[in-house]
Length: 180
Image (cartoon, rainbow, N blue to C red; front, side, top):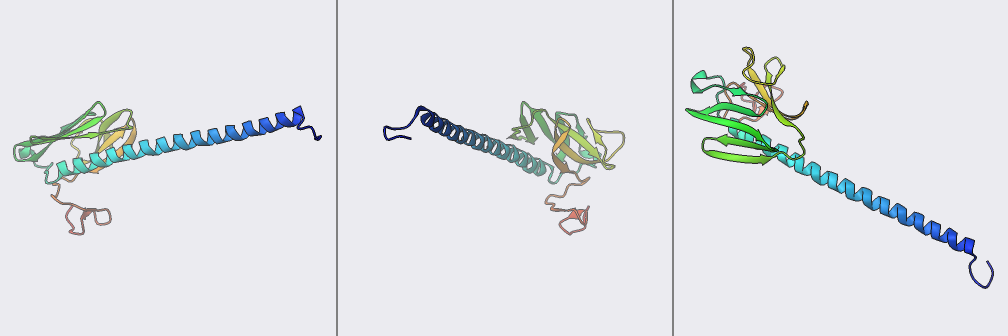
């Protein structure tokens, strides 16, 4: 460098370095924004699944799925119907990204965000998965909310669903009561 100022080469090198720093900063900001959007979407999906589980378990509370006098248990990929009281039928229906849970005259709607192809699968006592229920003489053990072939939520079903059951995986009963 001489006393008159910077040479053209020095000025170009400085501009290239400033451009590289700015490109790196812009890329970092974009990555942070995309990550934040994915986290926000993931939280919305998780909230929808938790809402579905909460409402579905509330619908199952007190249901006796083994008593044929109360009504049939039936289902397919988009609808599950079961008796939830004397002469009362509960229905879960999947419609356009929503789960509609109807018990008696009340209906709850839960958004199923982030599920591309939501559906229901039925798991029997032997652990086999079925697209429709009733299956060949099996006992319904669980209902799964699926996204394509991937399980999103699995709700365990008891033949006589206790009104308040804190299922204990170790004992296989409700909250240490020993009830199945």
